[in-house]
Length: 93
Image (cartoon, rainbow, N blue to C red; front, side, top):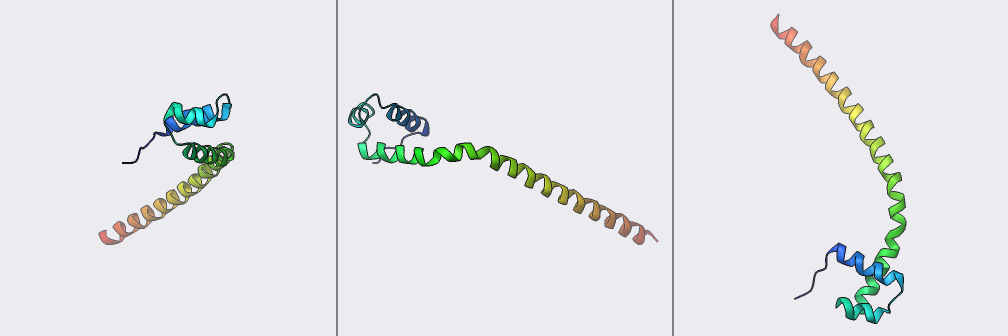
């Protein structure tokens, strides 16, 4: 059965790995994780680091697109409300 590690555990181990106070073999032995797995986690971490700083930009873009969509939906609601009101008046006559 394969071991599954939490993201918090992986972050802790990679943080220790990036400090370079202990060798890869020492950390692998200490945390009971294969050295190849540690290398993979380090590669994933280093690859993903730039996206941490880009996240603020994407959040701003998401907010802008959300506001645009909200405006369009409110316009549609107004249009439909007007049509319903007109139809109610038409049916009463």
